[in-house]
Length: 314
Image (cartoon, rainbow, N blue to C red; front, side):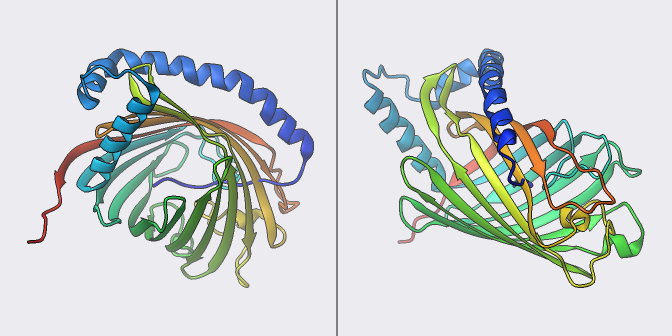
């Protein structure tokens, strides 16, 4: 449910990311202590109250709960926050924060539908965008994941031509778990009065800890993203600052590199909260625009409002 981002090849930037990560890990883990205060009681109910003697038993129990949760219909409420509104390494020269509420229905067979609203503090109309989407996701094997999604965008700022420049968003995503890393690739096709394409590649390493700070599972997964974009033939520069980053690019190709350090705090069957530090390095920018590296924080949360078991066929 969430938006994506991007970078380019400058090795000192990678060093900056590594240095920042040491401090950010401490910051995000300390945040878990505060979350623990109001989730400890719920966690004890979400996971078995019977004594568990070994790490293997803990993992087995939590995996069982997650499998049970995956086989249920769910209504989920999400609330995300960005301290800076940044997409694909661009903030479009506007210093603003963003809040994005989401309401989603999830089907145990992998189908889902959702609404997301976008509140951007620096826009004339603060409620800047509505996103209605449907999608399908599936694990082909235990390691190979695929998904497809369609989104319809409705903008409130700008003139009619700007609001309709990009209104349809299609995405295909796939990932494969190699044990030591996970590799994911995403293809985006966007179309309205104009069109654009993007290809995203990311590499992630996951570290998981069980029964820590009142959570069933805490996951730290540092990720490196690389994003490439291609101009539509008639795309004017900065035609719609609310959508596509490549409007500020001078050529097709890589437009952004991004390093992310997320920490996810999960109580199975109830909630998941993720805090993340982002460092973007945009490239291939149009010389008319001064685009610089940007660092920002995001908080993503999902709360299961209700869930019910699928009916068994007789």
